Image (cartoon, rainbow, N blue to C red; front, top):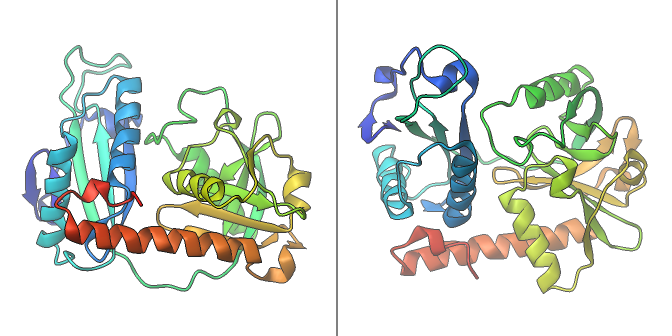
Length: 298
């Protein structure tokens, strides 16, 4: 079952308007969220980012936070995932419109929500490839939005796989490190300081990235958001990437250079433990509260 514009329908019955601007022009946004034991993690944060993006693109957001919370609960139940690990994706488009670039004066947005069970897989250290053919445009207003226009990321991922790597490191137009194809990147220096690119370097400010920054501040782990060079990353003691699905994923190799002898480092292990604590507290808090969107708070 999927949710589409106020209705729960079987996937084979899903239909989208042929003139939907999301399909024709990538005119829309999306959010991907993790569900632990039937509890949505960081819903308030995801909703806030979706709302910021919708306001920036001038797309009405049909669901208030309370309505979204109720919808997600019902969708999980309809798919027999009420007590299981899963992933949720919200897709918001401007809806149908006339030919051409200009949107309709009064758009009627399309909102679709899908859910899938989360397979349990061991997160082994990754091999990354520094992408040279596709760049993040740090000057684009879309660089900080989770827009439907992901073709640069798709091309970067394809290049990485062609090079027998798991994912790409994307550079911006100034040859500075931005992100992976669908994740934020962090490095740990030999002085045990955590470094990560800034929003103005062309990154999407990830939800898990935000939690990592908070955990570092709360646990006196030095962290700096700064412009990173390729040399910074290749010379790092530890490297890891983050997103809501991967959580924290260590990196074992970049191009042909080994990172930390291919093992997960001590600081990565500590940060993973802090994130796991947040997740466990989220589950416990959700069981006591009717509001899932408070679950991420400690």
